Image 1 (cartoon, rainbow, N blue to C red):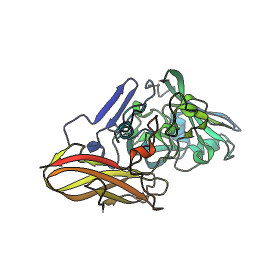
Image 2: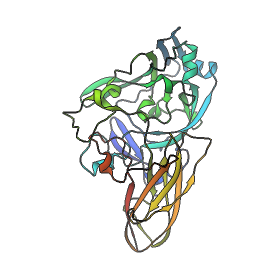
Image 3: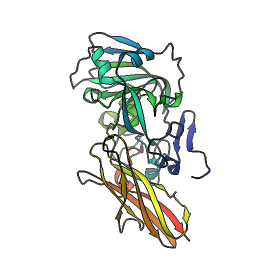
Image 4: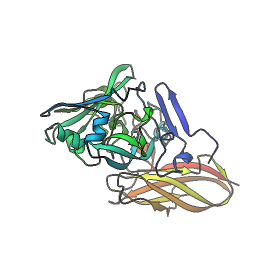
Length: 359
């Protein structure tokens, strides 16, 4: 492992940082102090004893819970799941032409076990209406400042997702209490969705007829077509980013590494939570020829990532490595970042490429 700080800090305030890819690939479960951090404002540090989260809106009996009540009154559930920023791999889109946002390199993702209570159980306790046309909104404690807008963080998910067994109100990460930067004392975990929906520092849960009107939900995390600009983009016509796409990344070796010619092992991650990763192909000549990697995936953890590795023979010289994943429906990633470029830099899922040398 390189003797470097495990995270690359993109901004100190708000704090946004991702692990170096070589560190990330070291563990199946990403440690909390390595796991990427995405913040839109301050990091709240509420007192545990006085913390409360309310449940209201289209419910029969509005309720308020302390953390102790959530731990004691509801069955504890654990899910192993990936969280990933919608802007992960934005640096690849930046290489096409300028985009907005932090230049995530491929480490704005992590896999952990999350423990807490099922959101569905809490909604049921409050007598929430279960109409699939409804939405469940999360309000948080962090004050945000984004593109000249100041607001308190808030997002929402469809009721159909909220009632899924994998969606939790989590208080533990990898068997230990959440740390402040990861949402302590309570956060939502919405596996398969962009990390923005897994709201941290929860303070209120509301069942309502429409999605959250907060800036993050209504205007910011939208996928626009390639001809849209900050001046022409209409948030009402942008696609709301929920489900994350099929994707894969080379973590080892590092981009621009110089290796000894001969056998070397390539390692990385792949993700396809909707259908599962079926195959990962690796190329050492930019995509002209491919061979298949060995996959490591737990069938009992459908919301986690697939780790892969592949031993290759690297001759002396300069080489462009590439990786692409396939899902169980036979779908694969687009070849080029140009194919999915958008000015906000979201959902880059093209082949991941790195350049190396061998002597």
